Length: 287
Image (cartoon, rainbow, N blue to C red; front, side, top):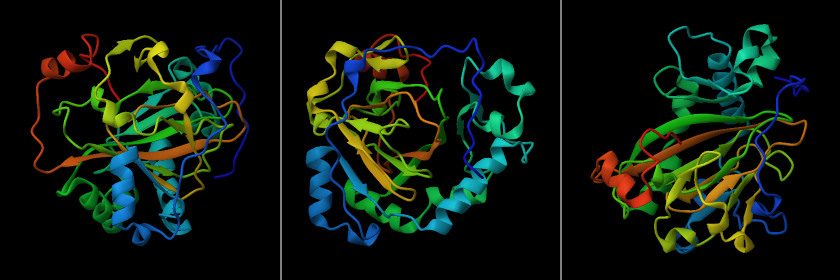
């Protein structure tokens, strides 16, 4: 699918946020050599810093197959699939759009595992699961699956947050997110930003503001680190790591698969127990 510039409706206004929330002067450490390059030293690095970046985790064919599967669902080719979420302020225009414009109005697709085998393959990739098992010291269990789109010019911010603030698991559970770049993730198109080591500082109270988020004034922005990825690059991050992503101001799409895994032995908690830790606004929030 070719990159195309999308015309933004005239009355579309992105939600603004303070410019200071994202810095662009520090890039995350990374390794290359695929999943087989992950040694005990990399696992230790993950536990110390809360993340691990592999620049070449997936092949070009695997990435193209994933893109094809994602577009297949976005274009409504599987009529049983209903997990499409549009950018809130663009949803009213979707029936007037051509196929490329409609794809670029979608914010995410979710719950696709049983609807698209090419995407299921990515979530059950044996080498990736092997790395997760080393990180967790347990068998990884898929907890959530989605594909994220940050469309050209109007892909919105995802404010700073911790993923475990959304999940009904005990706060000491090693939930791990996996972010697989289908397009290059760059400073201009809204790559992921992280705060290394913040997972070791415990849960943060979240508030419903621009989203379910950490208060802007509580983000240690001086430690902000960008995760730049080529297509096929992969980020593993701890469920308590502070992370977020700014608006896409470029003419390039930023598509990615985002998966979350928990240890098979993890014990679930109630929504109220989670809210007691992360904040009372979080009853019906979605990651």
